[in-house]
Image (cartoon, rainbow, N blue to C red; front, side, top):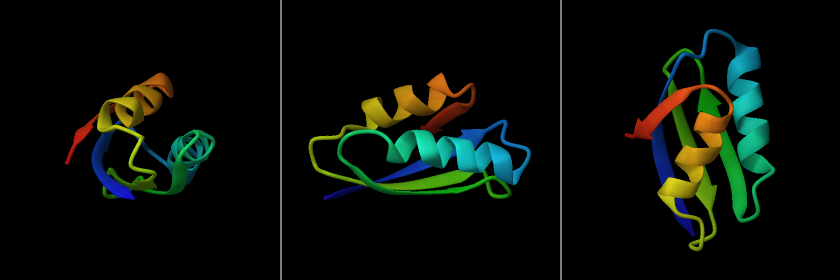
Length: 69
């Protein structure tokens, strides 16, 4: 297991954080995605085969800017 901590910019509501969490949880190897639009953070629990780069790419694909926290 691996835990990835993210700083996510641009989320303005619960819908934004919900969309990011749903997209992340649809990834193979992601067990849980907790995304907080107020804090602008994400904590993603994955199989060890999922890399930070893979997580960043998926989040950026939803239209938000993100980086490791």
